[in-house]
Image: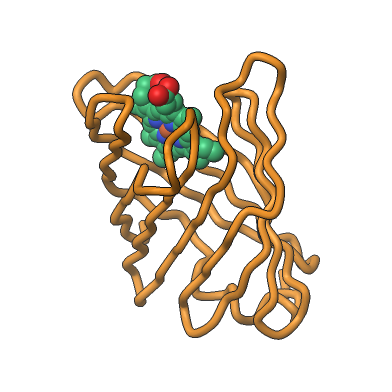
Amino acid sequence: MVLHPDCAALEPFLGTWQGEGRGDYPTIERFAYSETLVIDHVGKPFVSFDQRTKFVDSGLPLHAEYGYIRALGGSSIEFVVAIPSGIAELHAGTVNDGLIELASTSIARTDTAKVVTEVRRRIVVDGDRLHYVLDMAAVDQDLQFHLEAELHRV
Ligand code: HEM
């Protein structure tokens, strides 16, 4: 499948990535997780983003999300992602030289979901290594660290 030309700057991110991450927030206990992330394309001007995580200790399923990074041409991108805890994030941002930077423009939640008001995502690829950091403002806390992970191409 030929990559859509608008996705050219996203090409370094394509692949199946696995590794481990850590999470924290003032209102919860620190935790460690393992992750598989599949970033794929179908020749259209977006890539799919399929993330699955598990607790390192028990191997039980943890967070998952599925979304799309929409390529607008050049370095401009948008990101739309759904989370089973009842949250949907919309982001705008850029991709340049293996760096994706996203800031939420809107966060929708179901009636029973936790209140999340802002999310920032930064994803860096250097060859076969992918590192990301996610900051969020949620449950009355200011924007701050929630997650980071180091993944490798498999
Ligand atoms: C790798 C992805 C993620 C993992 C492994 C993860 C893991 C966790 C864990 C273990 C907790 C504490 C237990 C719990 O409340 O369920 C938690 C809490 C939370 N996470 Fe995440 N999370 C991830 C991504 C996200 C994202 C993308 C968002 C926001 C859009 C988010 C928002 C929250 C919120 C709002 C809480 C609750 C904080 C509280 O109740 O005080 N998480 N997360």
